[in-house]
Image 1: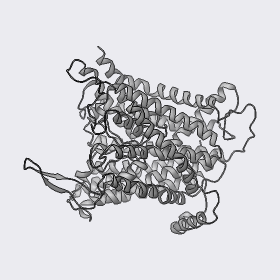
Image 2: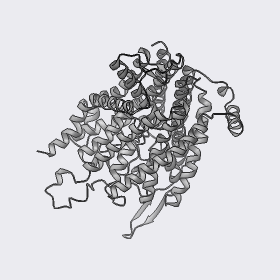
Image 3: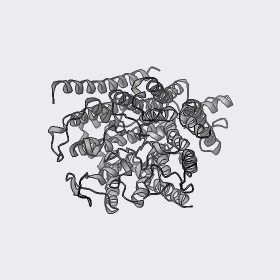
Image 4: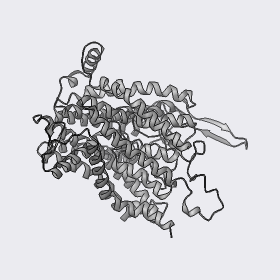
Length: 33
Length: 557
């Protein structure tokens, strides 16, 4: 596997983690609504 | 007549099985007493989970635990798929996967969608199939079931429970035993089960043909029972190894709906309102049967474009059907698989007549006619909150559900969850229909092409996973967009209802009075049905007119 696919894979992994981060924030926000 | 017998066999069989299974689900997920065996099992799960399984929690901690579990599953599965070429159990030497496809696949299986932009037999090693995708097929429905149980406890005024105990209960006491029963049945009926690689056969013409095989029966059992739907083979349940004959078709179809049906009875037992559960079950069944009736009627004749051709017109629309199952089995399966969030297919949905093709979309738009394991009833709960609210407004009384007041906060959260689904379906479709991201991937112009885009986003947002096909969807924009939609559309309608249940559990239980809306009556059932139909029609009918309805009218010219 070359360097570029590794970086791309990491980017997509981080994208998924970012979505979960937003969902954590949603739970925190839902408490105040 | 054959079609009616098939409906009775499958829907009736699943309904009959759902009652005892609902009783088992209650006992497995939320035992009445922790004496004896139930207590021992509970202690094992709490010992296995260590500090994570100590104590019961409120809705917020339950949601955080649920998310943390899914983050870990997402990351581990991502790493397995990204490194499958170096890992064992790869007898056919499957190579590396493209990054956006890995993201889409892992998002898809984590969210219980199982939308597949790849062909399993061509892309995935056995390790990827078994340790990543099949594992997620077990735990993702378990997450949905755990969330439903927590919501039911909250609505009954109790603590939500412990997520890590619930997910173990759902995996080891529900999903695993059910699959252990179903997989051998499928093997006996002719489904392959082996860890060996492909075989090469020489055809009668002397050509060489590579025939893929693998642990299909095990994969198939959890695929259907967990409302997963992701096939071992690319053609899913049209493949002769994945659905060899009439009886595997019947058993698989029953397996698609039986656990979502059982969830309704489990919910009724936990909240102690079985008559209310029966009303909800009846509303879901009525919607299911209407959709089955429409699909079967609209599929009973070939497409109008064939009207002038010298073909038989009394055999139904045979285009895209597996003839070993007959013309009726295709539309029936299409309805069952999209009313639940299963998504496996036994016919080509792209080849359904235009109006028949709309029926699966309606199933995914409503996403609550039994729906996915656990989450289907959670979606229905959102409609119930809105129905109770609307009914309260009509008679001028404060709305109540299960003796607790439904106030502004609960309605706001319910509307947000319902609105999110509509936004993902319609917003995504609009974006891809207006840009080359979608236009350049279509194989059909006009209304049918629009339906292909609409179906893909409906399937992603409903966590269904079936494909209309006819769409070149393994591209970076499709993989990223549907991956994001699947994750957000999975967890928003789980987290917000848990917040609603948590909020309601804090409220004082009010005594029933003459002004209380009775939730175990036919009147409530009709009110719920009307709420679902009006909300669904107002939200999605304009999109339906641009796609399947426009295509149908084109043939009427």
